[in-house]
Length: 474
Ligand SMILES: Nc1ncnc2c1ncn2[C@@H]1O[C@H](COP(=O)(O)OP(=O)(O)OP(=O)(O)O)[C@@H](O)[C@H]1O
Ligand SMILES: [Mg+2]
Image (cartoon, rainbow, N blue to C red; front, side):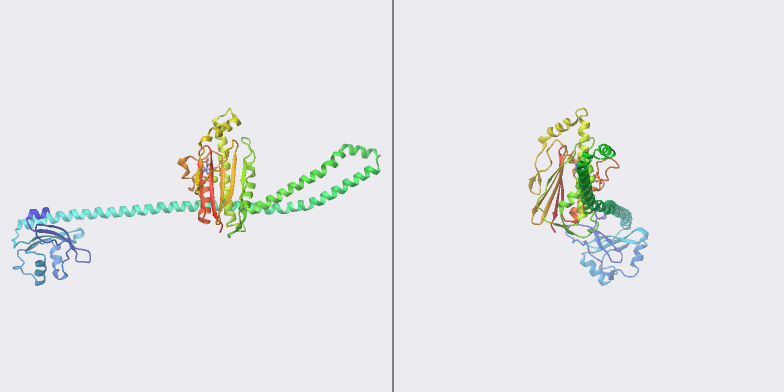
């Protein structure tokens, strides 16, 4: 517009050449009644041979009047269409001395004799504009490069996160499969000697009974034995021995039976034979997990035995990956035990001189905070409200297609600001070396991705935590 005003013309435009194409009018300032020619493309025929090098050398084309100027009919017609009578055309040279475009002044109202000063002015302005445009192009290029770099950096960051997650899963899967193998191996190794003992124990009981019977017969028929025999029977306290030996054998039998159950549970837990989905008894999985964690459930120096409240519903077999699901139970019950241990430690730390009664007060004083929490549309709240460490495990058939498993503890709970992070890989609040922060992220994957189920968590700080699993029946 400035150019138009300076030259006092009817129209000024910038015609930009496109690489490999003719180009078009990209900028325009037009006055009064004259038509706009923005976007107009010049016909190929107008660019006669040599015009490119003519302009590239910086020369100016001045047309005072299209009817007196030596123009091709096509050119004249084109200019007539644009309402042009006189025209001043100066080249705009871009980088590498390329012809970037043309700065053109149009006189529409009548012919015009272009003065040398006017020509020089337009040339000067074209040069300035070309420099500005060149700089803008450079700026755009650097902007584009920066955007491309940012996109690349974002992609890279995403890839790193994905890699991190995959690595985390691999570590956990490897850890669990190693545990599974170890458990299966131990179970197998124990199985043989235990069966050996179990098989022989019944014979041993039988023989013992026979021998004791024989001794009794001797005592009946030889009431006055040789002094050496009396001395010996007194020394070994034959009365007590006769009474105790069958009991010992009985308790040995109970012990061996327990070991055999343990072996069955260990095998259930590892289920290394089952990479396929199978109809699984969920309760069996929970029971074997509890058995493996038995040593942690038992009373510790600083806390009572954890009470396990089982509220098992009537569940059909569930089509699932047994060992993966056991891994989830292991993680959730393991976390609950951690929370109970930690909760205890915190309680004791808060009231070092009050001991066990302080623990009870701590729980009870927080009671008011309990509010039912919305899970799955119905109000359920299973966090045990007892003054001693508790884990409540509840199972139910939610509808004909889904089973629900709930694992709740009355441990220290999870602060509100942390709850959205607990399923993230590597998120842990446990001391270095104690928690990897993978348990829940893997559990989430197993339940949600592998089984198309649901895994949710509700927690009240200071009260406890509840994890809710839903698994489709098949
Ligand atoms: N029952 C719970 N009570 C309180 N906090 C819990 C409970 N379960 C999980 N959390 C919190 O969620 C965090 C993440 O748990 P997650 O099982 O993923 O990792 P972790 O237990 O810390 O380590 P690991 O990989 O050994 O399981 C825990 O560090 C803990 O802060
Ligand atoms: Mg854990």
